[in-house]
Image (tube, rainbow, N blue to C red):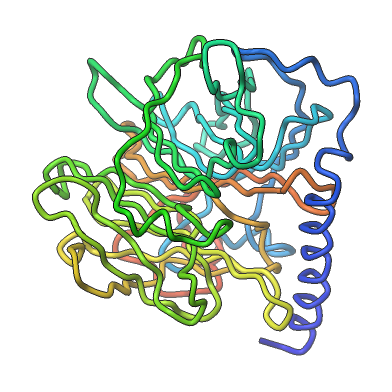
Length: 373
């Protein structure tokens, strides 16, 4: 890292620390006081949308980065004080719709606007709905509402949304109810070790294996970090005939913030870096399905790594799906702005390159003649 970039990262890291402090001390103070009263069911919200045409700041012609190709992104902002803090995401309707969860207990639902080349340029019909604690009461307390990850489970007859929570470490199973978002969740039985995770470093990631990685109905859950910050990161295979625990190798000071299964069965994990020496960073690792089993330490290969020279923030949500038009695997990422004026809510899309493209710092369209898709 150059001295100039290190200084920039240090400054940005300091601002991020201030943002985290700000969000704890005065959550939502950057939002207007005219936010509608909190009620059950979805409410339309007004959003400001800023397209992010390039991933590497100041390099508009670069579009390939390691094992991924940038497919556009947007920065979102709203005066609604409930909006923000996106911590997990799934894609629906062949990639044209997202449902996200927030760490203050909300569902966020929106359609995606793509241009003719498949680049993300906007969103449509954004809505917020509180997660319901019971038939009449939304989740309001920090302990109840700290949702961190969401995954689609079940089948066509009974689709469900699995949501992991920190503080009160648990996974809830909600019926998929895109019209009303009022369904109540049922608590899943989890390994006892999960209850001993650090309060604010709990179940950041859940992922449901697909047919390409058959695991007998199991669920994968991964912590943000071990209680011992120098230890490898714990994960669990929950349910199925081969249930048990595993570890993911700690590399650098990265924490795991989400995970998803690719259509080919491999597991991808999203990681976030934040410290005062290195600044803020994002990394995505790919772990082969064949290696995923109990009593092992997994590592995997890096798909992409980025610092604040790129359009990233506190990256927390990840999902993957196969584009039915092109057959390409698409990754969707969201960031958690902690509802702070010093951070950003980002929604980014990437195409998985297979095999991974060698240059780690991008390639211009002019140098290859390649199209964006």
